Image (cartoon, rainbow, N blue to C red; front, side, top):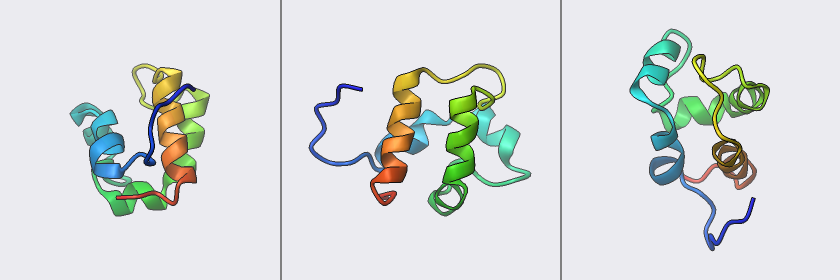
Length: 79
């Protein structure tokens, strides 16, 4: 993925906005996709589901969004 970033993606600015309200509602029984702590704790499972195309449940994310999520996980998950 070509990216002109000088800073790694942050949760509040880059990751949280990727999750729609309906994604959040669908997952609330497991964890909150708008919670840094929850997403950080479950990031490996979330990334695996994103890569498999099974999350979100209605359509797979574009590769660039999944790559951004992976970049966040590999960058020590900045807030």
